[in-house]
Image (cartoon, rainbow, N blue to C red; front, top):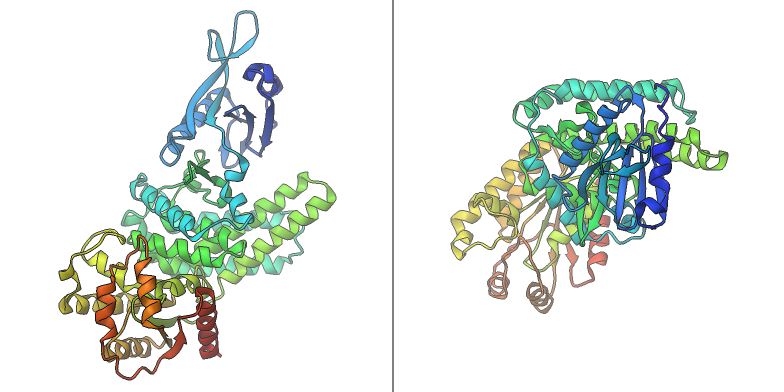
Length: 513
């Protein structure tokens, strides 16, 4: 890193309340910028630094970076990013925003938001609801769909570069209690995973999966604006970091959630994202992607400890070590399993599947294949759009179950666990799921949820916007079905949802032992 140019005069100008209409000024300093918070505005100054991956060493480079930041972040947070403003020196030598004179510095002007609007803060206070988590996945999926294609980046070479950068930085990081052998072992494991998936990574790059993404997509770079999650502070300074596989972009958020112990939320984000995009083919890469993200956080967090006092540094290094341990654990392969959760409408199949997905299998967890969502995809409509009655004919039902089995077969073959969420009221449908697991050489657990008609009717009646189109009349027809012999594990679904989830979790764990 080159020595910083002197920006003290600019920093003093931005720090004075008199230059912000008298509003008090707070500052947030990072390795690359200083943000000045005053009134309802935030002014982001690029520090005059040059790293191996970032160059803000001249005024013109900083101006270009500010303009790129404004343009790129307006893709996801136009309500936050207002303008790029020059700081000019008048003929009398005084500094001011915009006015006449020579521009001597540039800042990004943003709408200020309270720090408790950050999703990292929301999560720390236990307020990251399932609805908010689903909306977050919706926003990311929509963003990735319109993000610029960048086929000249990413792929196997992009991952290889990240592995090298991680290894070099871990080798020279402050002491984490790691032996050279541990660091070498992680490098070798990630290299082996890259070798295994190199062809797939190149196929995804060729098929438009590498785009100009966010690049730094963790909870601290997502905030609530008017109650909706907005992605901000994307990477503008490095194509290596920003022009990546969309699943590598998503992996930062998934890893962040898992590191915080929010595995249910991680599973929700992953499966909602996959339900909205056509990315199931990339599932084999996720363990590698998440591990790389955890490795990045390990050495970045360790490096930041050098600027802290002794006690804070110890805590920071412990945090860094926990990221390293997560990176190692994510690459430990676990046998793929097939879990089928059946039951009539209103038994809570989807709630149970969503709650447990993050806990099962390797990497980011299990892929939930929900018959309601698969049906909507067959008709090329969003999950929550209602379908007409003819979309539920026997012929269509057969197509839905065939599609479920086909997709589950491919995902199991890739080493990812699957949860099948379907009514499965017919004995032959349940038998087909069992046979599928046998053919895939995957362990199988069949769960049958059952509840009283009154409970089912009440739940269906109060169901909000959902992929299921089941109504009270549909349920009444289901209640008349001859279910035949049910040899799956039967769970009482009259209980509260968390009790049902716990019973299903215990049943799955018992089958695994």
